[in-house]
Length: 407
Image (tube, rainbow, N blue to C red; front, side):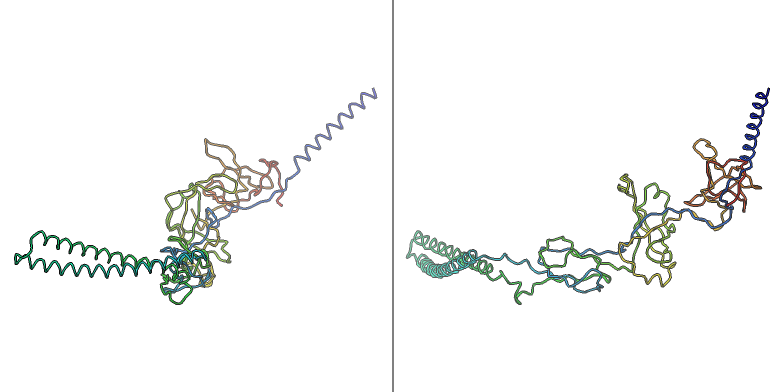
C-alpha cells in the first residue's frame, strides 16, 4: 500500500513539473529588434564600377618611316596648338665597317674613272658626228651637181646616222656614269650626315589642340615605322565616364537618365546623364570566372550640378569611380527594411510577402504588397500604415502569437 501511494505521488510531481515548464515556456518572451514603417525619399539604383576618359583623344602616329629625335616632353605636360611635339629626320645609312668603307671608296674611284673615260669617248664621238655631218653635206652637194652617184650618197648618209647614234650612246653612258659616281659618293657622305649641321631636312609634328600629354609610347630617339604610336594628347577638362554594364541592365537604361558618380576621391557626389548606350556588346570574364555579356555606356558629366570647388579637383583620364544609374526615385514613399520581409507563399512565379507586426507585446503576421525595392528598403503599397511597428530582423523562433520584448 505504501509503495502504491509513493508511485502515485511521484507521477503527480512529474505532471506538475511538466505543466509548470509549459506555462513558463508559453510566458517566456523573445527579444527582437523593431522598426517602424515610415515615409521617406527612395531610390532604386544599379551600381557599376566605371572610369573616366577624355572626350577628344588625339593619337599621334608616325606618318613616314623616319628617325625620331629624343622627346623633351613628359606625360602630364601641357601642350598648346602649334607647339612642336616630335621631330623626325630621314633614316640614316648603315654604319660602314673598315672593309665596307674601303670597298665603297674603291667603287667611287672606279666610277669616277669610268666617268672620265666615257666623257673622252663622248668627245671623240662628237667629233666623228661633226665629220660625218660635213661629209654628208658635201656628198649631197656633189650629188645634186651630178658629180656623185646615189650609192655613194647613201654611204655618207649611213655614216652620218651611225655617228649620231654613237654620240647619243656615249652621252647616255656619260650621264649614267655620273649617277654611279653620285651614288658611290653618297654612301660615304651620308654615313654620319645626321650628326652634322648640314642636314636640315627634319620634319616637325605640331600639336593640333590644347591639352595635356596623356601617354608617351617611348621618349628615346629611335627609328620609327609608318603608323607607329608615338603619343596621345587630350584635354582633361572635358571628361566623360565609361561604364561596362551587364546586357540585362543595359536594357533598363535610357538616354539622358540621371547617374550618380561616387567614390571618385571627393566628399561630394558628382552627377551625370547617359549620353550613349552602345548597340554592340562584348564578352568579359568576371572575377569569379563567369562569362558575362556586357555593354559600354557613356555618361557625360553634368557641370551645372557641380560646385566650383568640386570642378577644381584634378580628376584625370582613366580614373576609377562608381556609377549609380537611377532607375526610379520618389520623394515620399512608405517603406520598410528588406530584413523585415519574408515570403509567406508563392502564387505561381510571384511571391507573396508578409511581415510580423508587434501588437501589445505579441506578434501578428500580416500580408503586404511590395512595390519597388533597392538593396536596403522596400516600398509598401498595401498592408501597412505609417508608424506600424514590426520586427526588423527575422529568426526561426518567430511565429504568430509569440510574446516578444523589444530590444
